[in-house]
Length: 154
Picture 1: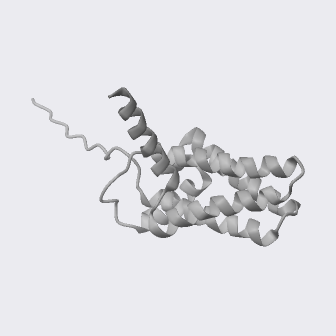
Picture 2 (picture 1 turned 90 degrees about the vertical axis):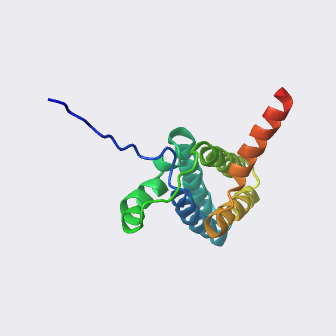
């Protein structure tokens, strides 16, 4: 008696639509920060955005609250992705977002409330470019770093 099992493995990588959807949600929150100005409410919302970036750094983009919303509400309504992407560049982009929003929060805590606005505005540019055009600035920085590292070792 011969038994044959065929296992189907999911393609490696992540659905590239997930990070774009997450960037759109993040962009909405960053617009809220800018509309709130430099007060405590704006600082709290920016801190929530920074916490989301921290989750993305620790667990990858799929481990964020935006990733959970995408998986549960959006992905089931879409066709399966035709391609997958390496999860490392989007994870690095989460680190870039954390640094930018974290710096804005730190500057605000040190006495310059405009830090919240500047941090939110810079992060908004990157989130908007990703959501609207699929241009992930943090991902591009990651790839640039790889090219520079390989050029050094050559």
